[in-house]
Image 1 (cartoon, protein in one colour):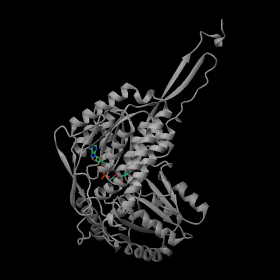
Image 2 (cartoon, helix red, strand yellow):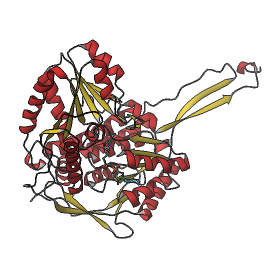
Image 3 (cartoon, rainbow, N blue to C red):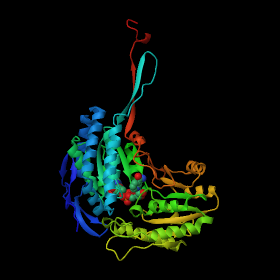
Length: 490
Ligand code: NAD
């Protein structure tokens, strides 16, 4: 059996350390249901020492006083080390998270790209000069908040950690990142890359613990200045309550129930392939997954048949063996998904394919699932499943299609399938979502701003927009003369 390192420590103040209370968390390979490693279990004491280290580093101004282009160079070094470790990261992510080796490698290379992308922007975040006449000079300074607390989910732990760590470093914040207890291992490679690159001790601290103690201790710590949270709506709401007590700014990247709208003129095969990739990649454990498809009544049967054929063609099994449909993260998650599928059937939906756990495999697998006869009031049409489960709804006119797409509490992503640019723009303009994909689900990249509307959150990660979440504007107004416009002797 392929192995990873057995025991992983936390990274605090430039050192690899055990948890102060000595606890550990077992890490399971979801494709086999077997324990593969342990991580040091951080609790409030470890959080405190990490925040103290981050505060001391921030107060030292070592990052802030550095010429921004040099901060960028430091980040390029982090990217170089991540790239050098890409094969190790791929294997780790495959065993810890269930991804394919290609998917794990993509995590590593995307993480490296975040450091080069934001490293390249470190010296381009500029203030502005505001004209106030001859007696004043006035300018703004984009100022870091201080210590950023970052909380990451388990589905893409490395990429999601990298995007917020890179933004924080580019803007001279320091940070404490809590990795997800279900799949933390790959995030430690960021710490290792920062260590090798010579990022100052205390600037980046990465620890793992449970949400209810370590996560809660971090977001309520009196010495943090900023929170970046990626995860579920319920956890986000509890973090926002904690942040409200101290009036701390938050970036909230929450869940989704994103819909693709297929128009009459669409290339149906393209739409079916895109939809399958949008919902079955990484077993649907993607916040921006296409979990709903809205089709015209006239094309409904054809689309369902093609989707079902596609779903049935997917091989199910461990990512390390290169299967198409890889495991979900845990037994509890598999139970939850199956429970939602059973509830959908009870509510009157029809499972054209899937809907059940794969009992003949050791790990946590759910078959590719397509629900037909879905009505907009059903839970399966409204609630995030976070599994390989697609709900298909029908419409009779385009306005109704848009209303259906917008008819949930979420607003993370949306999609349009059409050959007509005017239709694409008409729909994109009306869809309430932070990101709209036309004819290819997941079109976009690190360069494109990503984030939610409605309960999917606020603030943006990725793209140049993200950097603005990590700085606050300071205005400096200077009276330069006693009057007379500064004329010497005036
Ligand atoms: P989750 O909310 O259960 O956990 C996310 C993180 O929060 C974990 O690290 C967890 O330990 C921590 N946490 C839990 N309780 C906490 C508390 N009280 N205080 C502080 N931290 C706490 O979510 P999850 O199950 O890990 O991830 C799945 C969810 O994340 C889905 O809803 C998905 O849509 C969302 N997600 C969103 C994005 C995005 O960019 N919008 C990306 C990935 C995942």
